[in-house]
Length: 238
Image (tube, rainbow, N blue to C red; front, side):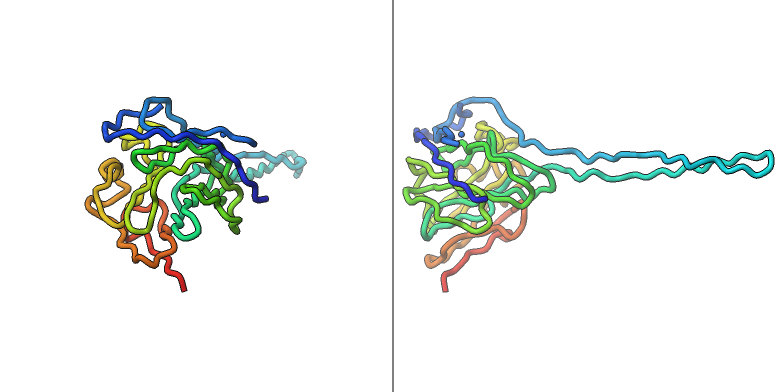
């Protein structure tokens, strides 16, 4: 069932010093950089169960034979993979975030980065394939098919347009850490504030960016995780 999360947010702006920064009504915060603790999405590990079935003994003369059957059943599981699915400019802006991993995950502890503003996602549990949409500007997110929850903020995270920008997703609020950044995209031009962190993490190409036509409605990932501009495409209106 689709649900809407009304979230109060606050914006603070900071420069490029990039130390680290310091959810229903859910309370989240859009902040500038500070320090805090990291949060890791929870997954479930694959397991196996073994049962031993011993049928009745059969006797032939003085010889007794016992047959043993062993059955192994795999228990579904795996790690979640929380990432950026789509950034919509027209009728937005907003970002769609999904779990493309084989395990259950949560957006708890994750942050969206639109330098120099940062927004902490509320905790939403995502089954494999489930999505949430997060408002980035002043317009609320519309009802979307396939999205289980929308997050409406009272203050926009930044000026996101098709002309130029970047968006990063972090698993904690250590924004200079290549270990914390989990997804990234930039368009219009290269070398935005957080692109070097994404390059160091191996999830973006150095100097790479998506060339987005002015009539583009959105950009969407066609590979997950995306590793550069070639894994994204622009959605053009008809």
